[in-house]
Image (cartoon, one colour):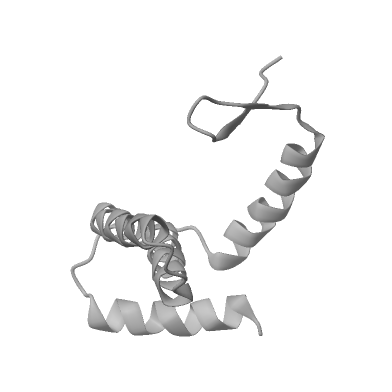
Length: 101
């Protein structure tokens, strides 16, 4: 499965279908999708489609800001390397933050 090719197909469709969409509008849609995931988590529902929706929305935001899927994935790899070298602390809400030096 090639995520770059899938994203290219999705973006071409999105640009044809949502001609007046903006980065901020796509971000608001991503927030809606995240809320749906949050609801599923509270009900212990495992629905991969909602995760796909959220990812698509984030890719749409990036594309409408002029950031390609390739750039996102390069940054993903770079950020993973950075994060793996960091020291992390647990927060009171069970999330984690890196310790700033």
